[in-house]
Image (tube, rainbow, N blue to C red; front, top):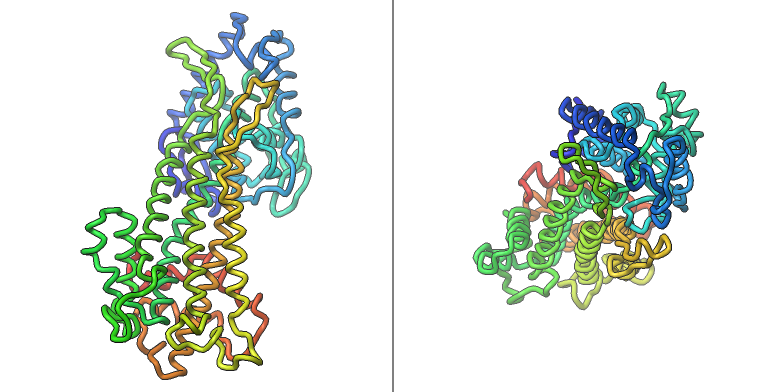
Length: 513
């Protein structure tokens, strides 16, 4: 199968299929016609010797300097060469593929003035697996992602480095091995390739996709802890949540009830207590707020992946080339800051549930730190310590990058979004949150096993859904009888969360919202 793009109706799910599963990309006939139409208009304007930003002028502060037709090719090449200023470790391949696809989709709309052959070459690079090496640091998020997108264009012209078949090599060699001829840029093409928000959007979209899975995993973690701590299910009754009306809250409560349906550990009411602490009782409200934020991010990103964000924009039917600011990343910057804060909260409440599991003053009779041999064994003592560290670290990353700005280009670009920093820190928060929730699930599974050993319910009284999750866990990780190397053990749970297999195990029994 192939994903057909036209700049209008690409979906997040299709981006994931291309960037993670290697799906091929094709242009629709409509897109080809629109691209050719815009390019013909640009060629006509060049023949008329019109003054157009980036075609016949310099860039940024140099926009008042006229460029002759003879210098336009050099202008575009120099633009890309000079703008490849990103630094640091490279983005992972799936993020690079996403950025390349989003750039192609924006160009396919037919408002950028690029040649069809240039766009097709970039699509060939996606389909044949030539992935430019893009360092992660160096974007202000306006004029879009100038530096990282320039690294994509650099490989397109056969310069710089690229990854091909798992090896990092010179882009020219990678292109040759893949049977792709590098492009010699024509007028307007450099700007069309490096103005836009596609790098930040590619990073943030991948964070969103994994956050959509993590919101389900967080519900599973809470249900597992609820089994271990004999939670009161009545707090998840739909009548409570209908009165407030937030969809995310209602969805989380529904998931928790479905996961705990049939449990002999977590009951509608408990004789020993009237209500649970907030981390259990208010889980629908906490998880639900994150769900609503994720839904908002989904809508915003869905819009952005079909946006034309370079400059200037070409309108052949209106005989206009308009210099504007669609490249400004503020809509995505705010979105990714909101997203990372929301994802961070899943870990925040998860770590507190882990504390309840390991703390004998809070754990409803479980042995301290979930070990039968307290003193000689430390059990899960430092697992909670590690979770607390990552929760605290995420609070640093949670500082909204979008509230910052610094002028650039001799104050011509005097407000910038920092949206790429928002997206990158969101990825860091996501990784921390996955690991923190992994620790909770590991601790909850240990606690459930200990309940069984103590004759207080446990495994035999699990709900069918939580039992399916528990049984899957035990195919990968045994209960901890005596102290082991916890790094190796907890890594197994991190991998299970990142793969989505715990969600799959639960959904074999109940569908999760």
